[in-house]
Image (cartoon, rainbow, N blue to C red):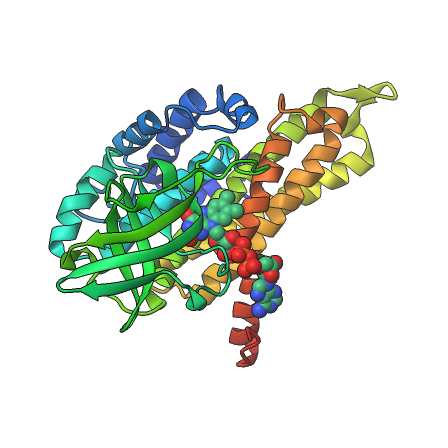
Length: 390
Ligand code: FAD
């Protein structure tokens, strides 16, 4: 058998074909060039300067709406999209969030449920990064239970008039288009809202201690008037947003392992070089136990992501399986980052090293796209047949 590779102890690269490797290399080198040298500074300042330029560059490497087909999208496989998420999140969860929201939420909604006119109008410019999209589902009083949303769209002649508030919306303040979910007389519907409409504003949410290199906003909808064709014709009910969330959660199954990998690598390097009591701390059994356990969970998680990706490509992936992946991989990723932090000692709390940034980012990833508890309840229901949500 080939030699043991500390970067790929299970030999998981064997699962990838040359095209997969090319996608991974492209995204990895983009992130190394355009994100890694700057991201600690962005994080410290709590901003993502040049986000429009970054979006256009991500568009040019095919990372926006990557696994969608047509309309300028790359038509990549789900595995390739996953690899891209992993590489982006190895740089920072905020950058992966930008890409997830653009591709898996805003573009996916239009691609899956939009009219031909809506797709032609928005998708090519979103795939190129010219237009940034956001996805408004969560409200101040309705997070895990979006069925109770208050945002309302009423008819006025042919037009729709949209009123309400959305909260914690990634990309909100920089978006040119918002996919907003609202209650109507016929149930929950999705609306494609150009953000320059009168009555629409998106103040940025400040004072975050997580995902600081990501734009997060409130969406304020004060009687936003939209033409009849602003509604997404293809879906009614929560099935709409949940379909998009499944796609984005799938990307997180991979992405979270990127944050974990970056933290593991930092810890391994540190353990090899930092000396205490006259020898490298990596030579102590307690440190080795930590590294071994981290490597086990990291590579199991990547294997799980790959398995789910293959099922998605085969059209056989169920939402409960995505819940299992998201629940496991984000929970293990945050554990890996916290353990890595201990190996770095005091340096572990410094932004000079990536681990604390990744660990605090993952606090958001643990909560958004369905909290840990929601995914436990999804699995609990699937296992027992009993609904414990309410
Ligand atoms: P709540 O739903 O109030 O939950 C609070 C706690 O109660 C959680 O631990 C939860 O698991 C628990 N809980 C709730 N119900 C139950 C139950 N039945 N049983 C057991 N425990 C329960 N939303 C968007 O729509 N678009 C975005 O782009 C977006 N981006 C985000 C970016 C960031 C940085 C963050 C932090 C959030 C973002 N969100 C976005 C919102 C996110 O999806 C919600 O925060 C999430 O769904 C949880 O909702 P909540 O915060 O209201 O918590």
